[in-house]
Image (tube, rainbow, N blue to C red; front, side):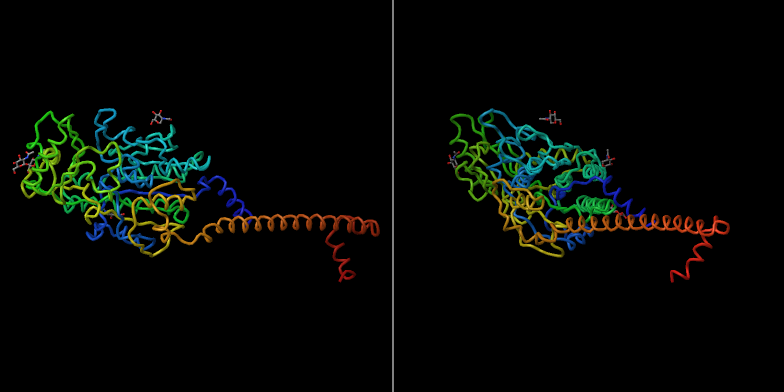
Length: 483
Ligand SMILES: *[C@@H]1O[C@H](CO)[C@@H](O)[C@H](O)[C@H]1NC(C)=O
Ligand SMILES: *[C@@H]1O[C@H](CO)[C@@H](O)[C@H](O)[C@H]1NC(C)=O
Ligand SMILES: *[C@@H]1O[C@H](CO)[C@@H](O)[C@H](O)[C@H]1NC(C)=O
Ligand SMILES: *[C@@H]1O[C@H](CO)[C@@H](O)[C@H](O)[C@H]1NC(C)=O
């Protein structure tokens, strides 16, 4: 019985596939503002927060939009370095408007996102991207092993099932998976961050978080997998009286427009640059509530302006304000979700200055590498790259973040490294003991058998008539002499 248990344990550990490398899951909840936890829609996430380390918020990158921030999380670079400077932009070299796609994420193909770095660091390291913005494209000419491009029709629980299946892939078990959820962003834009709709979605997300943890528990992975939960940015409310139409100040056909509320990109046609700049500066004085920057006036602290994709003129609305594109969106939302737009309707907007509290994302983590019941000071989104590298035990490439800012999230190294070694040593010792025991038992049996044969033979020789068939009696006879 004991033998069977030991044997099945050994067999099980060979059949069970899981990466030998540190395993990390990063989950992003689009537009989950740092203080959404105050809404009490996420009891499970709050509980989970106590089982790990969290920061009140992170300092994200400007513009506080989805693609720039996801790529800063993945590369540790500011937008002016990775080139994803907005959710759309005008490329002055190719003379075309660029939206989400391969092109957007390939400003410079020497940039290595964390999922590629992981695979480059070892032949048995495999990465996965579950809808992470930019995760489905090849970098340096190579796709990662597991990826699913964005598809909102795939249910959230199904996404988690797929992620778990990647971790357990018999041939290529993933040790890094990036996961993306498009809410509460999608409905937040249409109904505003303070809506009941957003509240309900936060509850659903709380359940998906619970589901992920339950699945890990079920597979015995809770103590093997580090999980980081975070968001890219927050969101604030804007109502129709705060929509500013800047188009009415400009001559049509004298410029191109890219970007979106609250950051508009104005690309003046040749010879119109100063005229348009002056018209917009006037408009800003008349309307108020937005700023006009020539490319060179854009604040350096945003780490945004030094990139050819950044337009000659950049408009940024003040918090709580937006431009005419928002009016067009509002109409679409009203049609799609069957409501009437009034002056009091609230729409969700992000993309403002990253110093504005409503733009802040959240951070929490738990797992074998993470401190328990611990809070760290807010750090920068670009620091996450160093954190991922440390958890995955990768040599970090050059980036804009700093490991010192996130070091306090991690448990001291030793325990982590020793545990698997101890398990192996104890296992080996047990196996050796088992073998010795087996050998001893077999030897004993052989000796005993040999003794019996010898005894019977000897007795048979001495008393052939009486003892030829009775070992037991023979033994009994010999006993007094032995004792
Ligand atoms: C990457 O995957 C896409 C399909 O998702 C495929 O079209 C493309 O050829 C692949 N690229 C490389 C370099 O493997
Ligand atoms: C979350 O899941 C629990 C059961 O796990 C269920 O009782 C609850 O209704 C769910 N909440 C939502 C908002 O779906
Ligand atoms: C700006 O507005 C002032 C009046 O407020 C006007 O005199 C001036 O011509 C305007 N400039 C431009 C470039 O339209
Ligand atoms: C849209 O909402 C109105 C009430 O606000 C309702 O009467 C109508 O049936 C709804 N239409 C659809 C297609 O749901």
